[in-house]
Image (cartoon, rainbow, N blue to C red; front, side, top):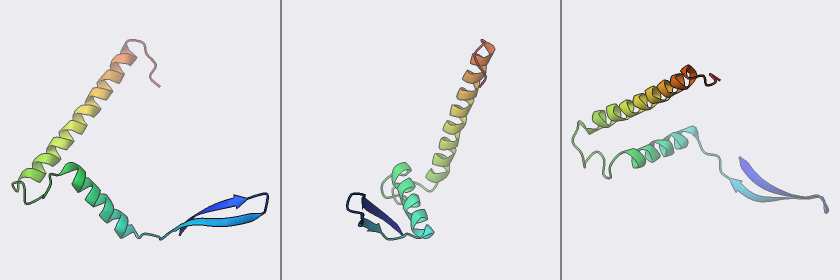
Length: 87
């Protein structure tokens, strides 16, 4: 359970301001899944797209991540080759 408290040093009082109910791991997973779906998939997924959309979107995202990593590493090695610091 997570609470927010206020401490009054002058009057030596502790006051509880808020109290949050604990959430289960299942609730956090469900919220994360819903957030990812809302962010990266079209509205009304899967009814609004063809069945091969998810594999396409997955491969497209992996390609973008791979390209970004390759670009970062090649730029870093170029800076090191030109005399920049490697750390």
